[in-house]
Length: 124
Image (tube, rainbow, N blue to C red; front, side, top):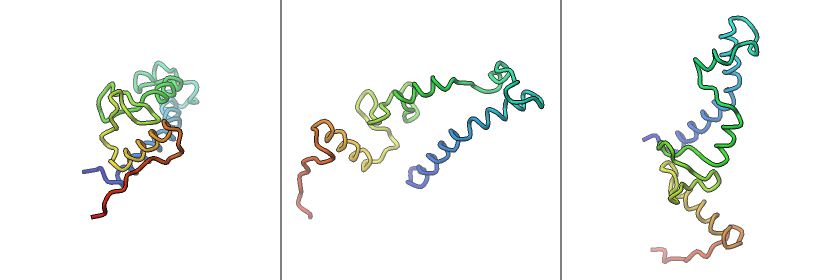
């Protein structure tokens, strides 16, 4: 279940919201640990005991090269094409999206702008 367009959109938007609210949450966590002090005064070692603290540079570097896969740890994907090392699209992607990306990739390879030679079949 849970593969409808609506649920995919909801999951996507929740992930965006988490990204947007992450700095506020960290500031709140620091403030709570500081026991009334400003957020900057809290010691990062205390924060690391409660939450996983990851530097921004590391996250950005990983995002450029690797995307989370379909749940498999170590599943590396190209961010632009969404293909893994075996040339497979993610499980959550529907066939229409995969076909669209494939067409775009082939068109770029051949130097044409979004146009490919599509064979027309009989309509029945």
